[in-house]
View 1 (spheres, one colour):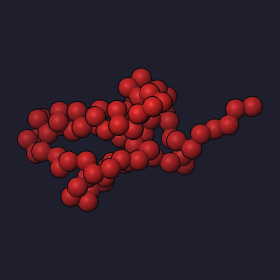
View 2: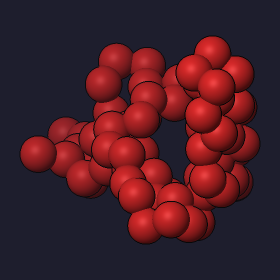
View 3: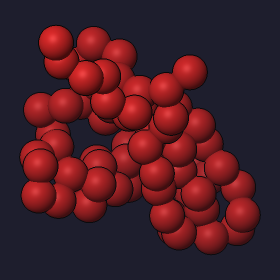
Length: 76
């Protein structure tokens, strides 16, 4: 039998909690599993989420502060 991991994964996505430099937090940000690899998956997730933030900032006209850190969302 396989052992379940402690990372929250929904379908083909891995969920992340993102902490910004202005001490705000966003939870359960989806990153496609295809964007990640075993060696530096969290670094690639940060790049992917930063790209999402840039798109959101363009549409809304309100820039996001830089990401301080991110962690994978724990399973419930």
